[in-house]
Amino acid sequence: MLEHNTKIFPFSKIIATGNPKREISDAELDSITNAVKTRYGIDFTNYEKASLKRGFARLIQKQGLGDIMGLWSKIMKDKDFLLQYIDDLTVNLTELFRNPEIWIKLKEDILPKLKTNPKLDFWHAGCSSGEEVYTMAMVLQDRNLLHKSTALATDLSATILEQAKKGEYSNVLVNRYLKACKQYCPNSKLEDWFEIGEHDSKIKEKYKKHIQFLRHNLVQEPMNKKFDIIFCRNVMIYFDDVLKMKVLKLFHSCLKEGGFFIIGYYDMLPIEHRSLFELYDSTTRIYRKK
Image (cartoon, rainbow, N blue to C red; front, side):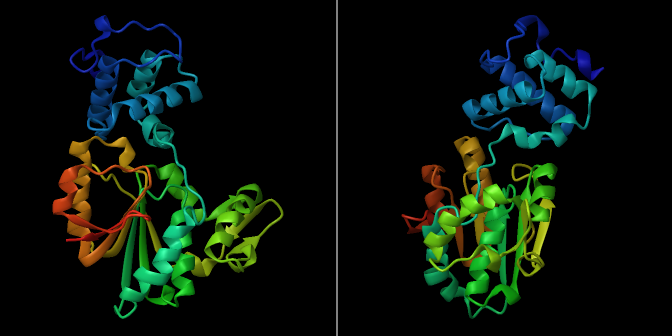
């Protein structure tokens, strides 16, 4: 039985303290990631260790599992558990028009270079709850390019994808986004983009119909499409350099000639990335395919 496979999880070497705040050791982390790979086929082996430890600690605490042994037991007994709560392993930080200077750069510089293309294709890898995808739709509309655009929005978490697909956000959040929206366009009005409700607001349908939402594992699954721009912002902070290069090669192969690659402000690329991409704009962390 998998539950008793000591090659995957060395029970004799783990001391369960029952304290959810106790730091997860490297040995425990290796054991639990091996178990996850065996059980679910999801490979966290080359994720950055400190970030992954924090993610597992959050999952243990949020689900009231007590300690690493409680997490192990839950994973072994419930085959759907981790797939339901995969988003608890990462911090989904996103908002509408986050880092407004990026969207201004896209509107004023990047998109004019692409406007003569007969069709435009975009990939939002690690789309989280969808604000980035809808922001791009609004920028495309500003440039009168939305009608010939398609967007693929992917994430590892099925739960967060369902949330993104709805395009519905609390009015508390929406009003918080307004400051960044105003930086992008001082005349911005939320009513231009949202159907405003009493408690929640929903993205207008015209900003949604070009988007395909798809569960996708960057680390393990191929992508057989070509894109003009790929967004992967603050996703690779969880990867070590080996895994970063694996993913960067995937992105490089999926970009059209001269295509653009946009990363997050917290992403650090290994030096080997220079064989694949050249820096286009340092302020906005935009690269171009070599």
